[in-house]
Image (cartoon, rainbow, N blue to C red):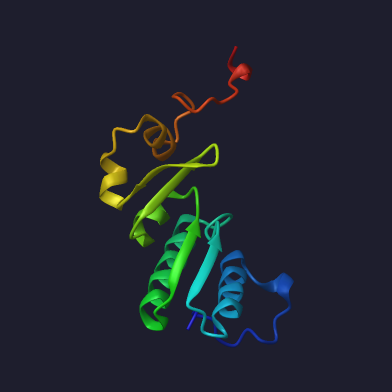
Length: 130
């Protein structure tokens, strides 16, 4: 289901980053859970493999009727897989909405995050720029 075939003889060190992510996902779904928690599922992957992992998350959601909870900073991936996006700041929910609502929000904190800007209401140490 995760797109891996004939890898059982490979050592973990021989697996690519994307293969390791898919092995982890195979382990997570082995017992057919109702929920799967993903913590930065695309970190360390190139954009193509990130898209493959996003497609896999959607496929498993549909095929296994899994609810996915994804923590990510990868907004392209979030836009692809999310029904709802929640943003936390300083331990509090500052946004809860659909992908379209995130893309169109006027919330300055959310805008700064999704645009990846070093300037805005979220303080960032830019002392190196002096």
